[in-house]
Length: 259
Image 1 (cartoon, one colour):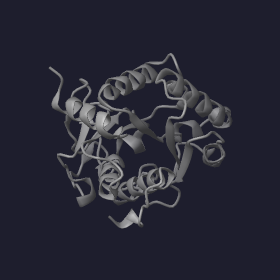
Image 2 (spheres, rainbow, N blue to C red; image 1 turned 90 degrees about the vertical axis):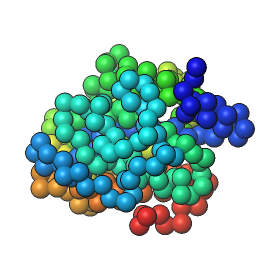
Image 3 (cartoon, rainbow, N blue to C red; image 1 turned 60 degrees about the horizontal axis):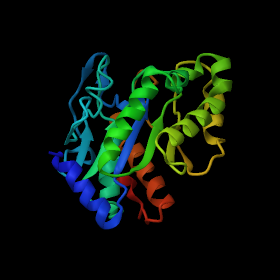
């Protein structure tokens, strides 16, 4: 017997072809370090990140469950996870009326990973595609939300190769998921582990592919480690991502950043 969420998505897809599934991929700022200090998460969950029966997540075991922070706890399991941008994004999209509930989030991000570790043929890429295909059995993937690149700022060679590697990743994903128009919303990094941050940022902002958007995280508040976004910054980023998605898909965002 199919899970209830899959049945609901199948019914919604049959009725109106709703696009309600979003992949969350990249490294630690996507998996969420909001409220994390060292090996401790403060467990503070702002209103924009509260659970809702209308927002579900695909677990590591490929089961749909009500989404709760930390979304990536069983995916980025070697690190302590906290608040990320996924929940505020989902709340904002639902509040706009652009998607019918339930909305599905598919956490895939893993902290500390370089883009070469996401190339086709790697474990991370295999898991991303596997989880995307499992989620899409009951609907259609609406977009990939991608926040990664901090690890590629250490080496100049890696930073300079970033644009080419990201472009290849997008084409591979579109081919393997059978969607040549798959929407990708990437985040231009706000910080980095090395000194070549601007090279990576320029590659992210300069990517010229159809249905690829870029949201700039520069200037969002960072935690004392100067690498990870604060909890409130993650909420702001989630709303920025939702605004980009809604504007691109023709749904007025009505200045949702303060939700």
